[in-house]
Length: 335
Image (cartoon, rainbow, N blue to C red):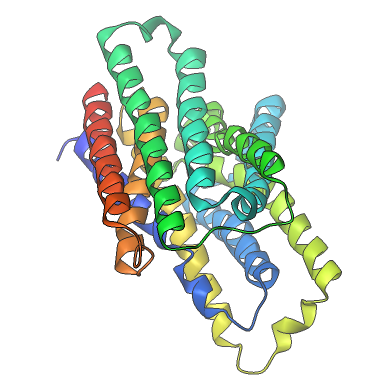
């Protein structure tokens, strides 16, 4: 199996894990959202990344001690930006609905997260055949995600599931746009943290695990906005006592499952981007976003999210998936 094929296979597995990681949250009914999200943030953004880096990179503390401080800080700050995106996305979701929020956030994240590394590191190849093919594939990603938004809006209307929120629609739209811009910072952090991966290799880390050296500072930064927002909600709503509610012991295991699925998806994406060649950070991110939409669509159908939707809405969603599949094929060829 070629590196490109292996990278695409890992991206498929990563997208399945990413699009299903929140399913266990449906069964943590005795906890409020902030209870589950706090434990998830501690596990997925702090404990698991630290454990993975410690196990896979020899002399990890020495690696960070010798790393360029400006580069290390930039990776951390990109993580903070991504963490802010997570918080804003939740607020936008309650205001403008699932379909529109996902469209804006994933579309902007795919575009910015792919184009900026391309311009920053491969500007000379932007208008070569490989670069043009990548741009075409990226354009199709944006089209496919937009069609998905239309299908989701049609589904919400036909099944009478319109979202209500105290946040005005215009404010929600702005929050979604800012969230989309900030969400791209995860890929920007990976692209700019490449020297950490190279240093990890010199320290004896396996080629598939050098990315853990990047994930640790990136996700530590991402944990800060999530943890602060959870602590704010726990204090505001008085939901700290939920952790000791009777018969909620299973919630800890369910949240651990969420953390393993999410961090596992991120780890697989990092490994796959290294297998996709020198344009891995450019091509891998929009492919990852596309596959998340595709697998999330399948999960949505299987879990009954489209039950009650019009036939036309489902047809439009299928068309979106077809466009995204074509985009994935084109982007893989660009790789």
